[in-house]
Every structure is written in C-alpha cells, then in structure tokens.
Image (cartoon, rainbow, N blue to C red; front, side, top):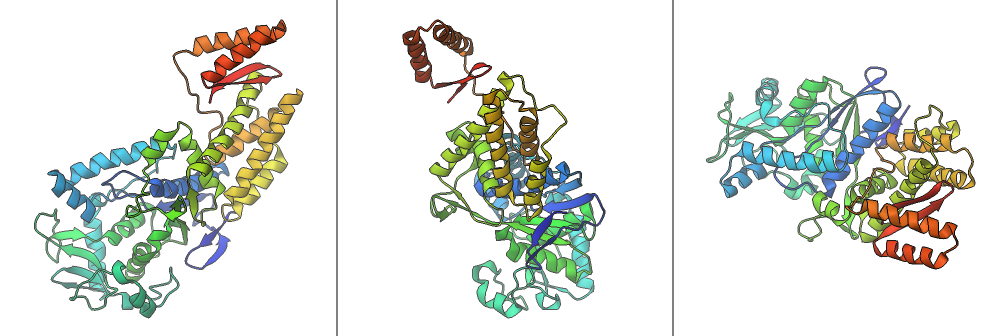
Length: 459
C-alpha cells in the first residue's frame, strides 16, 4: 500500500481510500487568465504521476481538477482588454490545456468543473453556514466566523492567534469583519463586475467556497485525497477545510502538497524577472518537455525543485541515454511487447514509489535497468526482459521512451550518407568513412554503431 505524507497529521501514513481498489483525487486547477508557468507544470505533473502510478498498480482513480473561471484577475483583464470574463476564461483555458496536456503529456482529469457552473451549489452551501451561525453578512458580503471552526489552523499547525499575527497581506482587510481572519464566502456586487443573485444581495462567490462545492458534489463527502501546491495550504486549503467543518461535512481524508520551484537559485516570481512560462521553456529545445518531467521525478515532490540551464542540459542528456537504448533495441529487433518483466526490479521500483512517492529512487532504478539493457544489447545477449521492464516502469511515471524523433526534409539523404559510411568502413576506406562521418557531424547527426548496424538521430 502506498504511504504519503499527510499535511494535516504531519506524518507519512497509509493512503487508505473509502473503497478498496478506488481512489478519489481532487487537485486544485488553474485560474485561467494568463500564460501557464512552470509552477503550474510542477503541480499538474505531481498529481499526474501519482494518478499514473496508482492506475499502473490497478487502482481505479477518479481525478478531478477545477477551473476557476471568475475572479479578480479575470475581471481586471476583461476590463483592460475590452472583453468579457467568459471570453477571457475560455481563451486562456485553451492556452493552459495546450501547454499542460498537449505539450507536457499530462493526463486530462476525468472531471473539470467550472466555478461559474456551481454558483447555485455555492449559494446553498453558504446558506447552510448562515443557518447554523457559522457565517454572517455585512455590507461587503458574507463571511465565515473562523473562531467557530474547531482546529481552524490544523493544516498549518498554528493557532488562531499565531495566524492573526503572521498572516499580514494574506488576510483580506475589511473593517466590517468580526475577526481579521474571517474570509469571504460571498462578495457583494461592485460596479462593472459580473454578479449572481443570492439571499444576501447580488454578488459573486469567494474563492475558497468554489472548491468545497465542486469537490463534494463530484466526489462526495469524505473523498480520499486533496492535493495542490504548498502555496495553497494557507489560506486556500485551510479555508476550504474550515467551510466543510463548519457545515458538518466530512471533507478530504488525506492532504498532499507539492513544494515550489526555484529558477536559477531563486524562487520564481514576476518581480524577480525569472517568471518562466511553459511555452518559453518548450521553445528552447524539443526535448525540454520530457526533460522537465524527468527533473520533477528526480526531485522528491516535497522538496524545492531547481530549474536552470545546467540541470535542463543534464536532464536532456539523460533522456538521450534512455532513447539511445530504445533505438539500439529497435535495431536489434527487441521490442517491449513481451509480457515478462524483471520481478526484482519491479519490486524495487514499487518499494520506492510506495514510500511517499520516492520518485528519485524509482527513476534511479529505471536508469540502472537502462544501463544493464545497453550492456546486454552490446554483448548480443537476450535483453528483451530488461527492455520491457524499462518501458513498463517508465510508463508508470509518464516517461516516454524513444518518443522524440526530430525529423527533417533530408532524412533520405542522411540515410544514404550513413549507408555510404557503412560501405566505406566495410571496404576499409577509412578516409572516406571519416569524411562521411564529419559531414554527418556537421549536420548535427549522431551515428551509433551497434551489433545490429548503425542507427542515427539528430543531436
């Protein structure tokens, strides 16, 4: 059974689902108004990996990630561009989907509820909180009384007094609130903003109530796993949990959070000018999408992830090693279709993953198997089980093997040059063979001589 660190309990403990063989996962999705960045990629990949691994072990995963399609940023962008909030949200959702799902190979969630489709459910939920005295209304909206919530600061392991002293800018300032920590469930209508009707006047829902209404509606009370980045622990997830507790609803059974990332040694932020979008990274090199996943896997999800030019180059080189093995296997007629896997290697891989998603150790196991597969292929030994094992374990983590083929209009010409070089070597015309190899190198073509003949790829 997989064991995961639980943010609420502060310990690594078994992930025990409501129903055997099934897992319900809610991972917070994007607010769609701008280009998705590498932070979005890390969060989405983290939950993609756990979903893929659990499905590989035979678990039926129900993966839900919301889309926040109304908030201050969307409203501001619509006003600046003379557009509408639905148009802004639809445009940027498509851009997010193309970068995250299409370019990075992240599985699409089974359900993607949109906030604006759940306003009625949010209003009903807020009414429950009003009826039981957990919420109050004032001129600016409806607020939750945090002091009425048992263990409000449980996710961050802090008392109410500590949170009041340390929250600062993360607390919404409103002199009408009973407590600085009280947060908006419903925001009263403002000129120029979209609104919906409610018993407390026209307005729109607060951020935190969205995920509570959607997760409980789609997955039901007591769903198994709630995930997101560590930046969401407070206030977002803390406030979600508080709303559910105040309403008497059983919320997530397990809480999981991935760490943030650094760009060139510093936390990524727009103010530092190191705010890197996914598309910018992908534009730099055709292997960068796969390299990004490998870097994520080589960093434990609870540790800060470092991205810079050097580590990206190292990750691309590692991708090339696993692809070279695949090319060598293909040239030798060895496929990954066989049913056999190396049992001891699979057991080592599973032990790593079951220990709080130990992806660094799991990836190391894969690359050690790549090394042994290469050695077997070079020696002309039977490498079928090793090759199949590499493909299987890599697939469990969403790593493609030999998937990136950079083609050009001169492929036939390259084939001819490689064949001519092979013929020159066979007739011991080494000067001609060297000339042809230099020509290929100048074209950024890498030729690998294997027992099954030469294979080539673009560098």
